[in-house]
Amino acid sequence: MTTFTSERVSEHLTRIITPCGVCMYLAEGTQRAALMDTGFGFGDLRGFVESLTDKPYVVLLSHGHMDHAGGAGQFETVYLNKRDWKLEQWHATRERRVWDVRHGPGGMPEGVTDDDFLPSRTEPYLPMGEEDLFDLGGVTIRPVAVPGHTMGSLVFLIPEDRVAIFGDACGENTLLLFAESAPIAAYREGLLHLREFEGQYDTVLRNHGNFRSPKQILADNIELCGDILNGTDAAIPEKFFAQEGRLGRPKDHPGKAGNILYDPNKKR
Ligand SMILES: [Zn+2]
Image (cartoon, rainbow, N blue to C red):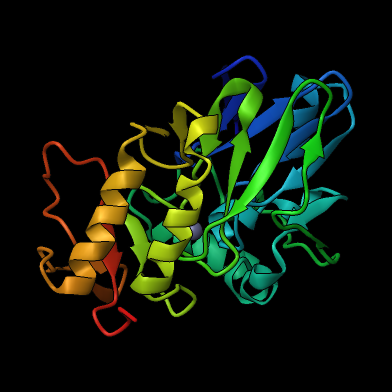
């Protein structure tokens, strides 16, 4: 049995938290709503969302990883950047999701069993990119492309609430060491593009950890990309599951909000 919890984070945004600590966001306008991300795909997320809103809604995925796309099978209308379609197919299988939660930092949450994991999505996704503005009535969601963590990663801007949901695209332990990640130089370009929208938000939200970061995290990670490219970062060996990479800053890095775990062979 899986129970979700929710909390209001801004005028139009509600955070939905899963038992394993991943969260997603529900934006509600006067006409319709949008669920951003779906977690690992266990428990009746759809039922929970429909207990929060009675408006028609769409589902938007920030990227194709299993802890964001895993629950997409429960919903009809789901958008995902085309660049992550193939990734989602192999990454978000039910088998991988069960394995990953069980072997992740917190293990299988108490009360959750394998049976709670829902089948993966078999219906096709709808494409989504920067050209798609989602007008919910009095509130809009604007996707901004930030290839890096995955090639199809999107940041969701909600200008009316002055919020940017960074997802996994820019964080306190940004994972850039995967086969599906962009080289550091290309990632830096994506972050510079995101910076063009800095005037439209004050609050940075994420889907992991404490779900929130100071706005300076973007500048901090742009700076760190420069250091990595110059070879002047801390480059501390660090593992994510079995994969070894380099951490750009020490884990304890006072005064800086961002960090990046990257593949030292994939800088350019
Ligand atoms: Zn991810």
